[in-house]
Amino acid sequence: MAIRKVARMGHPVLRTPARNLTNEEILSPDIQGLIEDLHETMEEYGGIGIAAPQVHESLSVAIIDFQEDHPRYGDQISGGASQIIINPKITVLDETLQGFWEGCLSVPDIRGFVQRPRKIQIDFLNEKAESCTVVAEDFLATVYQHELDHLFGVLFVDRIEVKPGESPIMFLEEYQRFQVEENPE
Ligand code: ZN
Image (tube, rainbow, N blue to C red):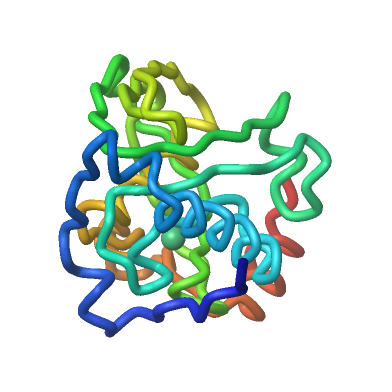
């Protein structure tokens, strides 16, 4: 068990599609240990999800873990979610786009406004190599899509649409000053 160092934007591991695991690998001490490390690292950095490439392991494993009362996101969700996701396949159930301000442990102190489909289905294996299906909508759908993008070498900044006169990407300090304080929802 260990807190791992988080890879930051610019490190090639974040741009490399992660490889799928076999059932045997999933049940191995190595991968079970990696899952524990992901939990510890996420907790240490204060995230609500983390993917293996973010700790320099190009493997298709991600976790999502947050509670309704999370200090940063508690007002955007009802109910918590805790999931270990391996070898996911995503199907969009509702293409209607919804936008949220996103952050990422690998892109520290930056917030970006990203629009994503509002409802998706994820077929994946859990930590016991059992087949699972989850349907996620609203903010939760964004959380899953952000995390699973990491397994395909995609970062949230890739999905920000920049238009003249708008500022959909901000430093955290300016985000808090100009977006949160001046545009309270
Ligand atoms: Zn991220």
